[in-house]
Length: 355
Ligand code: IPM
Ligand code: MG
Image 1: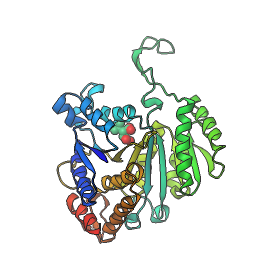
Image 2: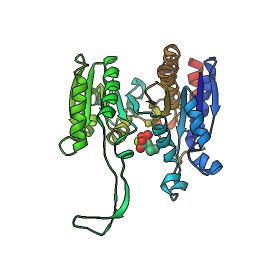
Image 3: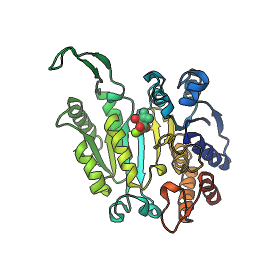
């Protein structure tokens, strides 16, 4: 099994180094190959997603990705910005299905900004469509407005679009995931306003016919944003488009106490996957050794489960993370009164000890 390791920028480098320590501790014959991506790749090769990096990722069974981005690249042309690296990998590897679990560990209830009784026991899975929608829809760009009240004025536009097969395949993935959980799927859209959302709702309902054992409901995205903070435990699996999924997944992440805890998996039709923490490169804390490595370590567990077919090792890592938390060590983002504050590598030490 070959794993492409792309640390990227900012804390991406630090947390991926810790996750690699965990992979090595498994003593499996995995082959790790490293490449630059994001701002680091721009510095070295003049492009955030150089061709050799794409080839390495495409040839691997799985990709371990850190994070990309830094304010110092804000002035670059949009096609050279570090974010293009992750968007490019998603689209070139056809990683259409993004899994973002949000689990509130009992030890971290105090770290959430919500009341304990709201988040205790939270365990939801957000399934985000990742290669379509307004993120990639053409046409897009700038022009002089061809019509309307501001005709002739400079304007910019993006296109929100979804095709039936695109919605069908993500709906199937979400129904399958719900089948392995509480059999409850909430599809989130904006069908009261958007044509793409009305179509989304229609197609998800059609796919439901093959999954009668799963309960399906539909919810408008504004209401979903509200329900996520009002009664987050009422959700089991959420399926939604790329744009709404981006926003709701950050909201769901915060329910758990820290976005530093949340892994993610992005899969294509052949279960090749890219695994990354849900958080970004956090340039404000980069280099200080205080980032939380657990989201990346838990991403390795998702990689073992979904792409490397090693459910046993995945469960081992997840168990070790729970034990590390139970032992009372905390990075700053999840620290609370009565626990011991540790740095990035000490947190990994605790996981390795439990492993
Ligand atoms: C995410 C991020 C990305 C996205 C950015 C970095 C392009 O916010 O993975 O949620 O918008 O998808
Ligand atoms: Mg996001």
